Amino acid sequence: MRNSLQLKLLAAFMLVITVTLGTVLWGISTFFKDQILAGKQHELLKKGLEMASAIQPFQEEAGSFDRLSDYLASADQYLDARIWIIDNSRQIVAISGRHLAGNQPRGPGFGPGGHGPMGGGGMGLSPMGGMRGLLNDLNPVFSGQVVMKTMDHPYYGEKMVVVAVPIKTADGSVSGAVLLNSPVTGINAFMQRIYYYVGAGGLAALLLALLVVNHLTRAIVRPLTAMEQAAGALAKGDYATRVEVKSNDEVGRLGHALNALAQDLANYMAEMEKTEKLRRDFVANVSHELRTPLTIMRGYTEALLDGTAAPSQSTRYLRTMQEETVRLERLVKDLLDLSRLQSETAAWQIEAIPLPAIAESVSHMVKPVAEQKNIALHLEIDNDVPDILGNDDRLAQLLLIFLDNALKHTTSGDQVTVSVAANVNEVILSVTDTGVGIAVEDLPYIWDRFYKADKSHTRTESGAGLGLAIAKQIIDRHRAVAEVASQVGQGTTFTIRFSLTSQT
Image 1 (cartoon, rainbow, N blue to C red):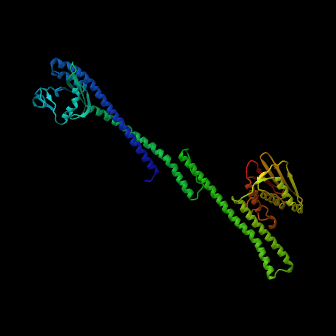
Image 2: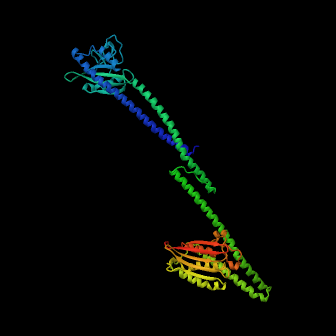
Image 3: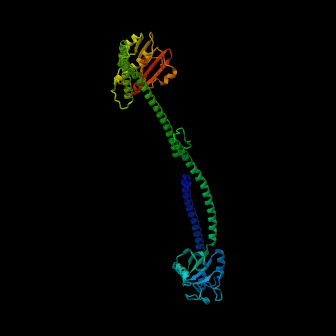
């Protein structure tokens, strides 16, 4: 499981989703918090400006900030904020909710008897510790500026929003400041509810993402697992295995490629098996074709040497040995010829060939054999047959093979016809006989090496079975198409179509 691709993808996706979702949620919550605090600051600023405008007449009328307690108490409840009034000597002169008489409780920063360490008749801000920092932060207020900040308040001991607004006289000078201190407890409670809902939503989103990512990774890994199994089957020689492809993406194309590879391997192995069978058959056939004449020649030679052959038989033995030698020479020649034709590197001299002239020449060559067997040989040639590109020697050899087969398998009194015709795209060569014909079950194999459809003929008449194999190689090298039509007892027609649009 540790090396599972699905687990790795799942972990990687979930890590990215978790980090991204956490970052987004943190950013959203921070944004909300900042917006709420900013809203609170602007609310206090607006109220502080209103209070500064309302307090300024008090000071001008009384010459001080006395008698503000009742006003500050009502404003405290309205604003939900502690209100400090500070004069221009940095002395706290009033605090909402407190009467600054000598017998009142005093908080941090206030001296005994109502006098702060900074002197004066009011309560002074202590210059020590956090209060000194707060005092320093208020300095811009006495220059006519507004101060807004969120801080851990040194007096109240909690986080508060602090807004300080200058109190200006009629001539524009600063006579003091209004300091509004609002705790962020309510804001924190509100933010905690936001965090709760955001966290619950984030957790639900993570669970949904887990389900989706798990389904996605399974959809990716499942076909890969099937491909792994298919590849293992191919490695073991099972070329029939296939992968079920359900998509057109990269994984689907990989599945199609694997199926194509399996198909190609199956074809290749089938071709290899066929080639191996042909090789075994070839060796067996060559051995058979060589064994018989060699056995005959050895037997006759031994008979002549040891004197067991009568003098009257010597001439017949020698003639038979000569015939077998000729057969061996022809067999070797055919094998070499077939090997050359099958070699792609074998060079041919290609030129424009008049096929009618080839037909006339070869027909004239075999005419004595036809006359000797009392077989009528006819030649039919159309007018204006165009030349074809090819090799004249090989084309003559091709026609000679067909005519030799036709004469061997046609009986006395029958006929053989050679025809050359043409149409717009091709030149057609046909050799037709009225001989014994070829059985339907033999037709698919007549082009194979050493295959003999007619088993009734003698060794000498039937040959070694290489003629049509050589003919097929010549036809293929000329990029022509061969057709065979035959009926037993009625004859056979070989038709070769040479295309005029292709080059040899």
